[in-house]
Length: 116
Image (cartoon, rainbow, N blue to C red; front, side, top):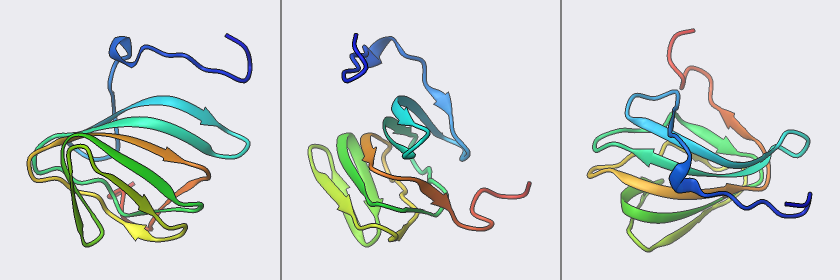
């Protein structure tokens, strides 16, 4: 592997619990300087991710299941792009696996992560 390529076998990576109950992730790439990255997100049926803004936008591909992003119900095999700074709180009815990519930071909105 060189510094310009990353090859991972996501199947062998463990899921890490996220802030919200029923949500976990696999971090595929993260650059602390630019705050850009890519991840796999798993959401159990009925779960939701805390409200946040992706400062430079976000790409979402639904690998399996369904997810609500803003006013849109996005299903398996579909792609969604979220504009920079748009507030969102993705949630799912049936559960889902997502691939997400973000070219900049993610800012969680005040109080969205629950009590400190």
